[in-house]
Amino acid sequence: SQTIHQWPATLVQPVGSPLSLECTVEGTSNPNLYWYRQAAGRGLQLLFYSVGIGQISSEVPQNLSASRPQDRQFILSSKKLLLSDSGFYLCACLGLVGSGELFFGEGSRLTVL
Amino acid sequence: QKEVEQNSGPLSVPEGAIASLNCTYSDRGSQSFFWYRQYSGKSPELIMFIYSNGDKEDGRFTAQLNKASQYVSLLIRDSQPSDSATYLCAVTYNFNKFYFGSGTKLNVKP
Image (cartoon, rainbow over all chains, first blue to last red; front, side):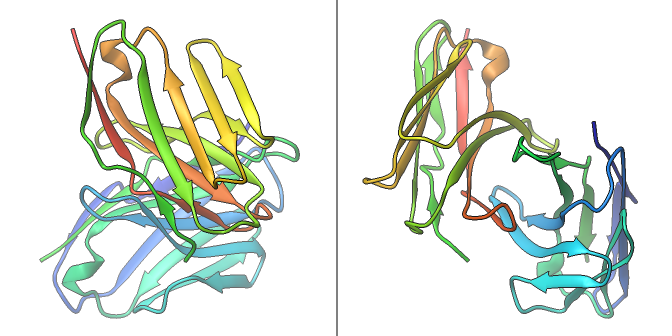
């Protein structure tokens, strides 16, 4: 089965600083990959999804961007963080054909001060 | 983004009772429906999925889907304190995009 690694697990960043969150997947090839954000006490907001290397679809216009430089690597970035970027960032991978399940990494908790 | 609505709760039930969680969705083209459980500070984990109208049972959990009413529910029988968590409903049309509700917080009181 798939294993998703996310890092860093926790970070505190000042407003205006850059951001890079990394996600890598093991146990599968050419997976659909997703970035979600969960604000405190809220549901999951789909930010980006990718069906392959270099293929990124953005759901919500914002100051974030995503890249997929390798098959099993998905990176979330920002050039200048806003206070509203604080939240719990989750990388997810679509399960093997037939399951339809999203598997989540352990998440990266970002606090912007 | 597509709308997926859930009552935020908290829903409080005594241990051993049935907990009923509800979800409505706006996109009539949605094909597949999922219930995830999320403990505080943790990532979501899948409980059940359902594709066809009707009921689907798995142990103490039953998912119910009514596509005509755009409604999906989750019943938890014999609720246990360990079931206390936030339950997220998710829908997808083609397995490219998955949309989540804001979740219902369930408290099971011993």
